[in-house]
Image: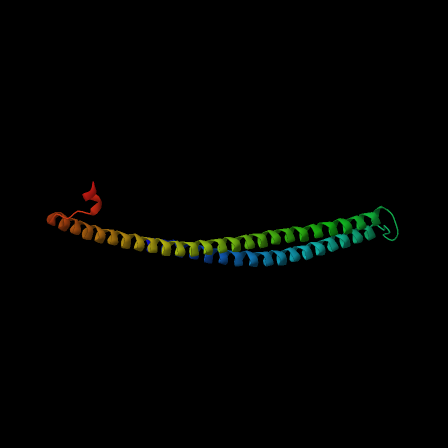
Length: 171
């Protein structure tokens, strides 16, 4: 019964390890997906910045404002381009960080799965030791019982025929 309990615990630990591995694989997939989505968002944002710059240019052109060289109109277009690029890079960096967090989670889940597997192995070994100790204890109890029976029987025989060990005669 004790070994079955240890084996049941080992099977639970193995099952947990398998689930942790599945979760780790999903976290890896989520990390890749987050990178893909982040790159798509970055690309879409850059496209919207280009559209905004185009709208600015056409608005300035409609007002007969020159964009060549320097001046407030050219500065507005340059600022839009620079700030748009910084925002696009922020989108990329955030996606990279989220993906890295998911990869870290996947690694942590794999480590937990390894620990669960070691726990399962320890349960199996512990169950084997418990069974062996139980057998040794049962064997020892049987041996002691046999010694007591034989010892008691010989003592009875000795008592019946009046024989006593030499040490007791000397006393």
